Every structure is written in C-alpha cells, then in structure tokens.
Length: 420
Image (tube, rainbow, N blue to C red; front, top):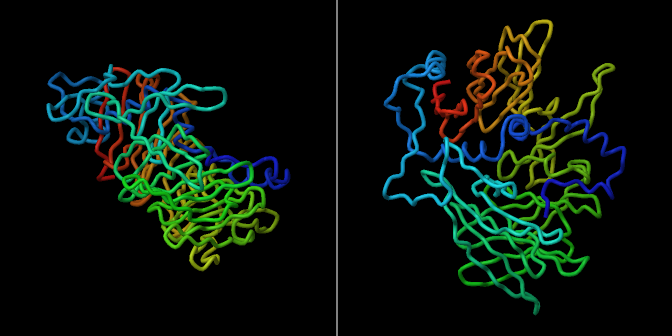
C-alpha cells in the first residue's frame, strides 16, 4: 500500500488545488537526490556512514585543503574503506566509495535501512534480494518467512529486521502492509478480505499467532507514530481521519475541522507520540491570505495550539528570504523562535534537510554560496564553493553522527560539524 498517495477519485477538485497550494513544497531530501544523485551516490552515503574512518596517509589535495580551511583540519577526515575481520565481507563491493546497483534497485524501510533488488510480475512488485550495509559494501540478508491463518484463510510475507525496524515484502493471501515498528517479535499490519474489508492484525512472529484488533472497515492509508503505539488512519472513501491505539485496540474519529479528510499522509507529521502537526485553515491579514499550522493532541482530539504559517522544510520549520535586506530567516513555528543569516545574495532553496541540519543554496548557479544550518542551535556555516569543485561535488547530511559527507567523485570526506 502506498502510504503517500492521495485519493484523487474522492477528493474534491477545489480542495486538491487548495491543499497542493499549501503543500507545494518538494521534500528537500528528495529534491536533492533528484537534482544531484543516482542510486549509487545514495548508497555511497549510507555505506560511508558505517565505514571505518581514518586519515589517508597521502598528501593533502586541494579539495581537502579547501575543506580544512572552512571546518578546521581536525574536523576533516578522508573516508577509507576497511574490512575488520570481525565484520562480514560484502557481497556487493564498494568501488570508488560507492556501490554500483542495477536499475531495479531501491532503498526501502521507514528509516531507509534496507536496499532491495526487485522485478515486476504484472503490476505486482516482487522483492528478489535485500541487503544491509557492512564495512565494505552491501551484505545480503536472509529473509524470514511468516505464514499465518485467519478465519480459515492463509496469508504470509517475507521480512528482515534491523534494530526496531521491520521491512516486510512479497505479501500473500491478502496481506497488504506490515508497519515499520518491531517490538519483541510483535508487529502490526493490515489485511484485506475481498474488495470491501480491511482490518488490522497483531502478529507475533516467534509464536506464529495472529489476532484481529479492529473492525472490517479499515480501508485506509496509515501513518504509524515514532514508537509504534498509535496509527493515524485515513478512511479515504468516507473522507475522514482517525487515531487507532494499537495497545487498547480502540479507534477515535478525528473531526474534519482538525484534520481535513482528504489530507495526504505527507500533510501530517508526528511532533511526538501524542501530538501531530497538520495544515489548518486560511486566515487573512489585510488582503494577504495565509495558512495556519495546527498542533493536535491525539488523546483529547483538540487543537492544542495554532501557529501562523506553514513549514517549507517540514511541518515545524519554515524559511523566508527577504530580497530588500538580503537576509535568510529560519522560523520554528512551534516554539516561535528564529535565526537570521545576514548578507545572503540569493533566493535559493533547501537542497537537503535531515534532523537538525539543513543545506541551503542555489543549485542552478555556478558561483553561489551554500549555507549549512543547525536548526536546533540556530547557527550556521557559510560555504563558498570554488567553481572547479562544483561540477562533481556532493554534500550529504549524516545527522545521527553530526557530520556531513562531502565527495568530489574521486574521494570522500566526513566532516565533523558537531560544534556548529
């Protein structure tokens, strides 16, 4: 099931235009990859995040010297692929710090923890192989198979697990989705029974038990909360959202005044386990029409707060460029704080965003300046990129390690930006 789709059949045309206007932003990370990256470049990013990092025993290049001048010599380390004996050897070897993959390959999982090779049988996508990252490339994973039965009908799927994330695939017997959160062999999923029935299941993988936990009317798009305790359910045919508690097996309808029934899953973001951010109503300030962002408490099903504006980075963060003052402002809609960067000569756009870090600049101009911004600290670093480096240069955010990966097609460097 596509978690990011909008049902254009039932959504009124005027509402679609309205919501698309509000959310016309492109996902920064997706835009960045579409502009700059191939799948190989993306996998290079994931690969190098888990690779041993050392300083190469060779003379510093002009590219490395430039990085050191910006971030400090102690913060720039060339990535060297090593294979400790305790770690498995990759089945797909890294070459030039990237992993070459075929066209029918995708990054999968809620946290993009897996890499898959697939093919189509008619309109059905079939996963052939799943990989995880090891020190020198990608290691094949051995999928497990679950086979269960409910109401006299057998169903099943294959799956792999990394940490508390499960990736399920090759569904059979009406199984349509297994949600990403994995907790002590317990997972939750959705199964269809005919054209008009879909219900939620609690599945214990080790005990091979199946429990139906909802009614038969869950023909929905779903969004699971970060810790897997709640499901937001978009009842597409009836044009409303609900919240389902997976522990108590109870469902509460969300009033359409809080969440528009035709809102897409990308128009809603969990702020924490019990609160979501979503688009609110339009308000007029003079002749200007602006939109609000609502913070909704999922326990009380009330609007807890209303914020002026909508986020262009995510549902929480917005940015604005003022041509007259040449300033770039980042605004935290939830906390009401902001950070302003002076003397910014371009309108630009967000070209990458992950966690606390954002890269801003104009990717279409050859002589522009980029800014690396730490949203939580409201600090930034100005990065002037020489023309000779721009053509093959890529920058990727490694939020969990507070680093950025910078490559120039020949070498790759991890830059520590924790002090930013």
